[in-house]
Image (cartoon, rainbow, N blue to C red):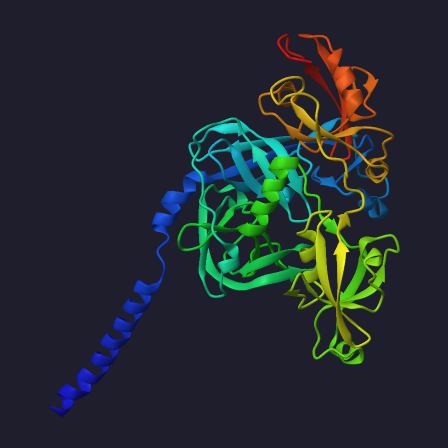
Length: 471
């Protein structure tokens, strides 16, 4: 009996261990159905950008490989090759997902930034040319539009309800591999990154690599809770830390891009800095919190509201400013003209001031004005540029395209939201009215030249008015 009991003890222990592992295995999430339901609405995005090659010499190594020009310091003029010149086409890949059955697609702004052509490949292998409706670089969100109907879509979740430890999954095209699925947990929420003051990122340990950018992050219900945007890495590849833009933030931006072609953010006109433990004590705060005003624009909204250097903003409309990183998000989420109640600490005493939010400097303050009805004329909505925007573009005149009708003449010619129209049929476009006047006199069924600026680069395209267009 003793020998039998000695055999049974380890056997029972092994059985208990295996039973525990089986229970744990049953508790792990199964993403099979989520992938089946969601994959049809996840797309691959391919972009092409034309780059003007240098006409100078190209330095080549012993095997003929192209080498950076700084190698000339080491090899002198012994290795120059022939000049390149001409135009080089560069391609890149990313991900996206369909948010409406009539062809609107969400992705990252950096996926399509500077692209001359954007192609979307659907789950059924159809490839469609996409129009860039608008992009917002501050939140890294872009909205695309393809000509298609009855497309599969994804349900939107509530990113504000996410909790640390929840299981999440990503679908995207890492390194061009379509519909790759990875999973993990939410590692942190409301994460602030140094270069992205307007996004409270979701941090996860979901494997994200180049090509995943712009793809959806799902919760266990199959709802989209984020857009995979970037990783933290020292190797260039995934190292266990990835970041997603909360879907609540992304949808708010997408709605504005769809309506106006841009996002006009609120502005206070303050320079802020973090409140350290020692600064908090010196200003009479109970702990390190809030945003300390180090300087402010004398003509800005904050100065007009009575704020001063040395004030600490502790809350906006009743919501606590836990750190200085929170303030840009709170103010940026408002629209110009909104009034914000700012709780501040001044000379050790709390008080509340009301500031009327202004326009971000350099943004177009004029509202978009239709050249004509959506499906007539050029089929664009445009806005006049202020002096700051013109100076930034190094232009004397021009109007910015805010919205393009997918069925209109402008879309056929390849005009996209964000383009700045400078000259049409060799006539300068100095205002919205000037554009109307030129369009009214355009010949039909004959191409005319249009000069525009796209992503800082001048470009000529041919535009042909329809005979049935109402000019």
